[in-house]
Amino acid sequence: MRIDNLCNEINLSEYSINYLNFLTADIEETLGRYSQVIKEAVSHTTSDTSLMTIVDYGGGTGLLSLLAKELGFQSVIYNDLFETSCEDVKKLSQALKIDLDGIIHGDASGLVEYLNSNSIKADLICSYDVIEHVYSV
Image (cartoon, rainbow, N blue to C red; front, side, top):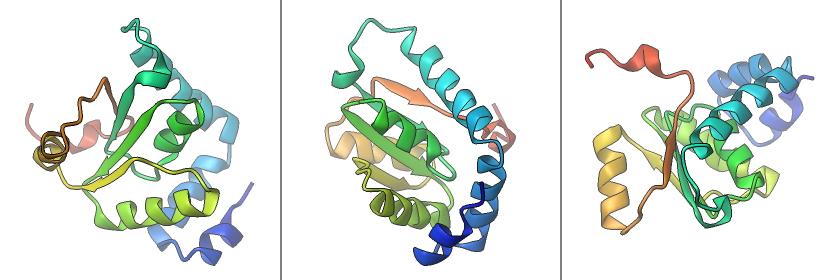
């Protein structure tokens, strides 16, 4: 499945178009990976997901965030260091009519500042495919 028409219609960046085409080439496998990340995170809590806030740290295309919202999390916050990805996720979520509760451009300190300044307690922080950006543990 290629999603070029939607991506072009909502004016996504070439970066996001290419990344989404790669991820949607085998959408079942991609959604399976993201589902597994969410399932593993939720397995460490007894809270009801409909009452939880989840942060998608290093969210890239936003697919994990959009999936989490569709799975019924109370609040979903997307975060990425790449401003273009943040802009594209805004466009994509609007086009799909899936409202994310926050789209935060910045690094970990920017995310923490946003959470603290808005009195938000994150119940889960999930991340997929960002380990290559950790330069010093």
